[in-house]
Image (cartoon, rainbow, N blue to C red; front, top):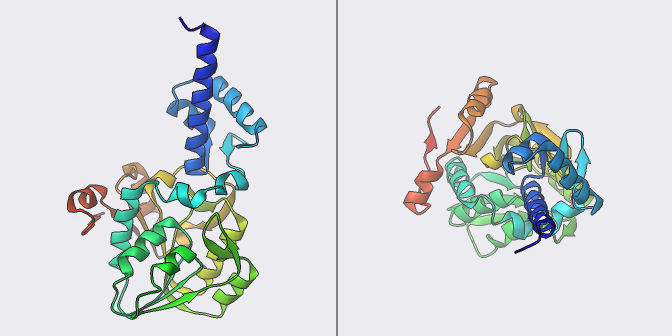
Length: 279
């Protein structure tokens, strides 16, 4: 029979790893949120977070915890590319229907924008501006797509370009529609964990006539370090049918032009279509 102390140590270790994975997936979390998610006391969560923060893998903030920029960004492309995939496919299908032939569009470095890009590779006529190497590579063999890759300092973790050169290159252009994503939504505000990424996204916001936010429902109600923008700055916000109805109503009542992509429709149709939920 396993000694009780040994069992508790292994149990605590497993719980802390699960907490770490949960927070990294969302960019941050509240104490009460973690206590409810892992069905344990606030005191136990406080102890777990103290251990994780001492290891340098999480950062304590008032009322919760967030990920240090380095911890969040390590392996971020490989981590993010597998998260909420059905939701991203559903969101991308709704977003693709908003793209008109001949448009000039901008796509940020997010994995959701990359999923959208996969749907646009066979467009008859399109100009694509992006700072994402991975997204750009999807269009390099497409003769009907005019591709502009913003330069700058390459970040391997995000497979994209950032920095002053990237921002200056963006400032010299003008696009019809921007599609971008963020790490977290709390209240009526969008957040991201990296300042350099925020600056690149803001540079794209500044040159776009229409701004469309692509954000899966798992990102609502969580926290991360840096404020990016108010949701009212976007012409359209597209999320998936996992969004809680109360939150959906709150956003609509606040004047947000919200589109809800149905995950179940995508799953059943093999990703061929994804009608949005009617308000």
